[in-house]
Amino acid sequence: MTASVPAVPTAPTPTPTAPTTTTPKTTQPTAAIPPGSPLLNSGVFAGATPSGDTPAAMPGTSTTTTPPAAKDPNGFAATQTGDGTVQLKWNAVAGVSTYMLGGPGASNGVQVTGTTYTVTGIPSGAQTWVVASMPVMSTSDNWPRASVTIVNHSGKYRVVPTGFRVTNGTSEDALRNDGLGDEVFASAKVEIVDRTGKVLSSPLPIQSQVHGDTSVYPNRVRAGSAGNFGGLTAGDVVPAGTDLGRVPTGQPSTVTFPFNVWEGTLTDGGDAV
Image (cartoon, rainbow, N blue to C red):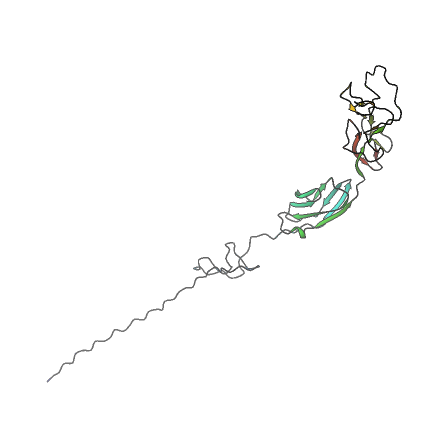
């Protein structure tokens, strides 16, 4: 007798497959970038790319387009060239056309094109200036400095008669048409001359108002003790109570005393008024 044996199914042979791999992406670090790191213009490190899909550049192959900071000028010097006048000079810096200057006569900062600048109206004493290349890359503490001691030989002067005293009165007008006592005004002619006596300016006449009794002429300056409205008599002092010969009291005036005859600039040993 023949027996039948059922066939045993054969398991299919598995087909080998390649393992799945993941390509890592290069990401930009979020840590603070230390000074001196090789940065690209895009702001990421050299050797990395924004997408991560493109092979990274080799370190050291990137360049920066930021120009080096311009150096501040050297050879900075200050020279007084006249009363209150100082010339400032410095050496040019390659690639720089404008400089920032600070100091007396340029206190708020002056932008200068070139390598020289003149300041005026500088007072006597030690003075200091600073200069820097533009755009300014350094703090003012590091700017080159130039100093000079200013010696001015001229200055402002004022001619001011402080007042007067009446020593003797004149004869009284019988009709007293001009009020009681005497009347006085001051007048002067001012000239500026050099050391040889040569006149440097046209004569300038100046005259004060009349001082005395104001009862008849109210536009006068009331002065004196001859009557209720003034009038000058022996012993009177104008201005009243003035200690003549001392520093004038009150603001100098062009119409009364202290009488401002002249005010201006004179140079020692050079001119006179």
